[in-house]
Image 1 (cartoon, rainbow, N blue to C red):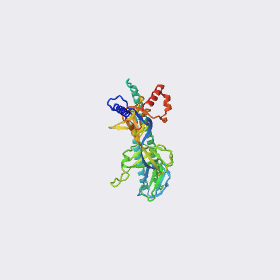
Image 2: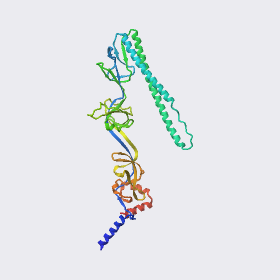
Image 3: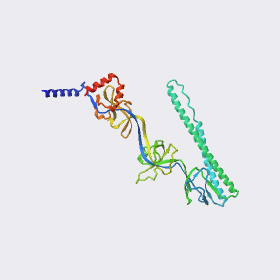
Image 4: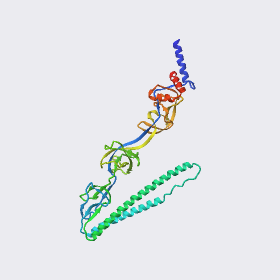
Length: 408
């Protein structure tokens, strides 16, 4: 009889729980739960780079003229106007012709610079100040928009002023070079032999061609950049101005930089027999690094990032019919299925854009829950129980203690 009564009791309870519209509530036991907190996510691309000069300037000679000797050495630092080499010729007309050619080239370059400066001045004059809006409705939004636009105009004006100042310096250097060549021309015309070619660039002498093959001298800039190559798949993910972290054996901390140039053409002639690679450059944000040309670095391109955003483990997100959900623990003692909007996913860490607030509790393993229902959890000291106990009211403490003792 006892066995029959026990079977009937269990069977009746199962019937009530599974019956459609039953008022019997299912209580879910959760082995673990977590508080939604913020974190930082970075989606990166790893590659290698090498330190190279930012600019290379070739210097050519007239192969028809008689070369005398170099006036600089490899590795020597030169400025604009530094003597580079000499021609040797007793023909005054030939020397004068060479000087005339240099003067003509520099004057054309000066004219180009002056034209560019005129365009910059014209561009600056066309920048109009922001006129304040007097509309009563959403005046605050209008003031904010005007402030942002005014800041953009100031930034543009400053950049134009900087460009004009740089071009003025270039113009002065060109004029000084013209003056030097004109002085040489006067000396030749007065019977003094020899013709010296001056450097039109500043930097360091990288190479000299003692075989007198053009370019006879290569001058490199002293400010370095980082150069690397991207595969066909990688180059589709990288864009100019993306932030970069540079790792060097000379520095413990990462050195910040930005993608500067991504070349459209492959580094080698395209072929069906091999993959194509595309050159890119990184401009370091710090100029304090004393890198040697040729020094190798590890390059980490940040493709996407999200800072101080809600983050959960990827496995905590339940997906169904193209929608994403989290099981959230409410203050009413109910675990409910909450639709969420996902953001950046990096190494099984998922950004949550909406659907749950910071500080709310969620179920890290959605397999433990199958429906919206009341829940109980195991007593866990690592969940800041003392802090929670202090914050809760006496009535709520008694309520949760009774639930924990009688609902199993």
